Every structure is written in C-alpha cells, then in structure tokens.
Image (cartoon, rainbow, N blue to C red; front, side):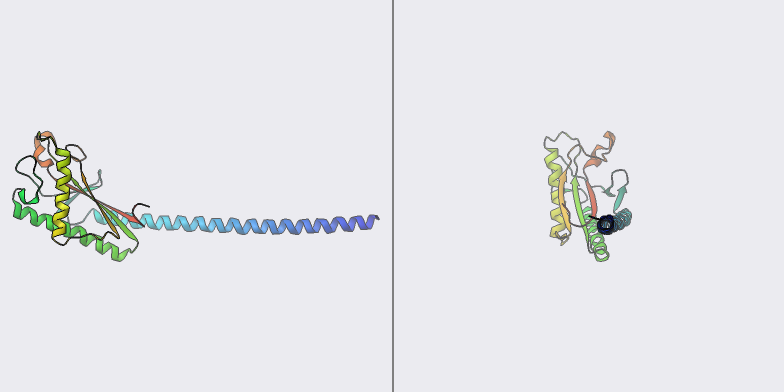
Length: 211
C-alpha cells in the first residue's frame, strides 16, 4: 500500500472517530442537561411544597384562638377550656362537668377544625391531612387509664360525628389515640386533674397520606 493511500486511510478513520466522539459527547451533553433540568424541576417542586406546608402550618397556629392554644414545642393544639370527668373510669361525653357549656365548646372546636381543613383544601387541591385526636387521663389510681384515655378520644370523635362533623377520608385521615397517664404536655402534680383533656394534632401533607 502506497504512502498516500495509508495517509488517506488514516485521515478517513480519524475523521470517523472524531465524528463518533462528537456524537457521543453531544449525547452525553444532552443527557446531562436533561438530568440537570429534571433535578432543578424536582428541587423547585420540593421548595414549593415546603413553602405551602409552612404557610399552612403557620395558619394552623391561629386556628380559632378562643378555643385552641398552639404549643410550638410539641406542635399540638390543646383546648383552652377544661374537660373534667367527676370520677375515675368515666369516658362518656355526657358525664363531663358543666356538660352543656363544655359540649357546646367541643362542638365549636370540631367545626373550627373541619372549616379550616375544607378552606385550605379549596386553595390547595393536593393537600392531605392527618388529624390525631389524643385523649389523656389523670393519675388518679384508676387501673385502666391508658384504655380510658383512648375511650375518651373515641367519645369525642363520635360526638363530633353525631353532630355532623365528619372528615372526608379522601383527604383527611383521622387517628384516635390515648396516652393514658403519660404523653406530652402534662400538667404538674398539683394540677393533676387538669390532665383529663384532649390534645389535637393536625398534620398537613402534600400528596397521599401513607405514601
């Protein structure tokens, strides 16, 4: 093979190689830009979701301040009125002290929660809620205070349900819980009777609860 043909073959092969490398680099560039764009899009969505949640959580702190007090350190709401049962072992809403006045306040509290959830849902269609109704019990010697605290939370939920305060399970999951003689936000020993109460935890989430 002559020198000229060898050089011609070399430059042809070199040209093909450079063309192939160019297309490989172009493909990698396009792929990198695509992944970068996707990452930026995901980050923007996450930031927007976080912003929405923060706005809703801030609004939650002020949900009917006449009925609720928000405890920042626990991220829970406590009712600003007392719910007392006259003796250990009682969980029926109809047995609480000042029954008429207290039931009215409990009714208003349930309506306030439902109204808040429905209002924010109108503004954010992809918003979901987890609503935790927690019952507590005082250390009064009753031997089933943990079960009792759950029954009290369930009694409140059923009371709201009987009054037409029903949370749509498509966007609000309700959990009934009882912390008995334990749990957070307990009153000191000298105010032990005030631990017969309800705590409300309202957790907003973008997307489906449980994913």
